[in-house]
Length: 266
Length: 196
Image (cartoon, rainbow over all chains, first blue to last red; front, side):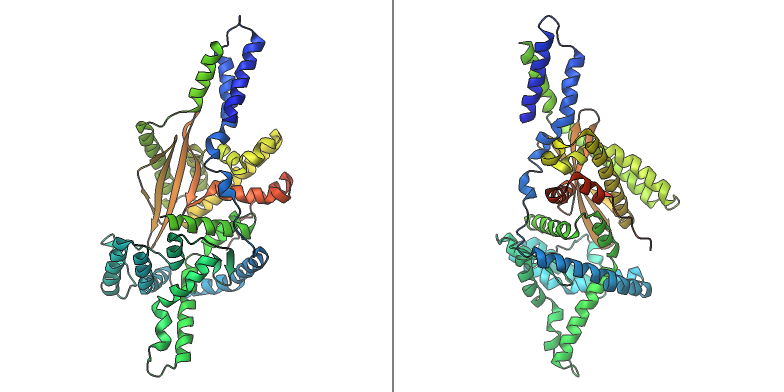
């Protein structure tokens, strides 16, 4: 709006200096139009990129968060990246994708539960159909015929999102060791998340010859392996993202919070 | 009276309503460009440099880089810059944006694009696309406005709900809150990808 005033003022000035005898010509008008194209940008776009979206995230832990971001970044460079590169060398991509699918299939209860809690019953039904098809025809989930043949797509939802759907705000931002950016709500959501995954019940399964503490070790090992396998398929994504940042911590923080907000809105 | 006429013409220039034909135009325009990029990505005979040069030609047609540069600094910082600073910033920003975009494409070269019908949002048009691969899906929302000189152009892309312009804007704003344009220029020179 303020621009409109400027452009009006421009026209007025032209009119005044030229007097009334000499009419404004097309070129005068194009000058006005050109000014317009140079500065119009903002008023037309500003409501979209309004200061509201610039609002800084509530971040009382920024000192700790920054340090943890650096730690995670170093962990990526010195542990995760080299180990998963070695692993990728041994296990071909097709195999790693299969393994990722296997774990994804195993995590069906998590998606089912949260779809139900978010009253997305149709999606919960699709998840169930996917689980049945992929566990059988898909050979324990290593393949995904549900999507490839039947067009049934997964609908990932977690407890952090469910809480968000019910109006729980994100709370302060917190960077978790090894896991990365999170916030109070999503970090709390990780606890029920962990309990809705079958891996959590390995210690209580009373498998013969496996004590409970061995079971815990197996569960932690399986989860670490799942993370390694999944990281091996997206190393370059993090590396490329990292190069987009001027400041890694605030970049990852903002991207995380905006992505979560968008996921919850869906 | 004459003044009033010019003010009216000026206002008409400023507010261009979106017509149904515009939505179809955007769809054709963007689909063609993105298909072109995809075809280049999948053409394994081209060496990377030639391929990237050709992609840059296509995306330069589709994206309004100058406007994106302006928007990424925003009303808060852009108007205060000198002409020289504007030019330097725009150049660095475009360089960075291109490098980042080409690098992202490299990650997703085995995927196909699924297009949704564009949607009108006020006087702009948004088109949702999905990059679909073997077991992954990435949503990219292209946002276009009608530029007077060149017709429909992309001014922002949302990747998984995260707007490129908003992301850059917060990053630049953060640097400028404590530093100067000179600091920003230094930071804008994007580190090269390590070769491995």
